[in-house]
Length: 120
Image 1: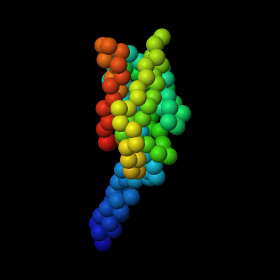
Image 2: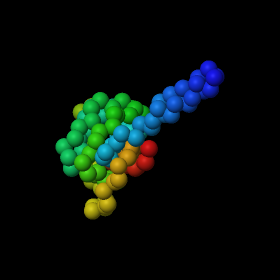
Image 3: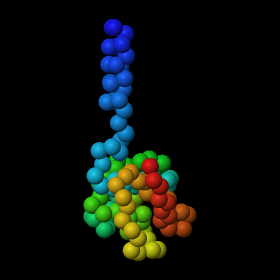
Image 4: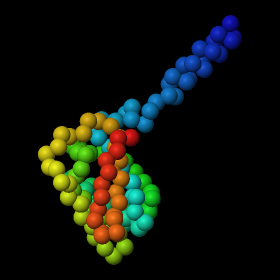
């Protein structure tokens, strides 16, 4: 009897403890991965005036919740003593559903910002 109760307790504990990081989401959440060799001091997503700060080279920001997010949105980057701008080629895309997403951002040798969108 003790083994049955112990097994039920372990199973119940396992089911309660197994929650994904996206189980509690109510909106689209986006983070930034800095694929560049330089640190980003500040990234401002212009659409919602949301700010990501201090993203190390090859590092990730924290997720930020958006009321309405898209696969590509305009943003500016402050890095060292330079500013970089990104403007999406396409406008009017469909809003993203609830979920976790990553903007992988690279600044190429010409100083152009390259965005790659990923679903986490």
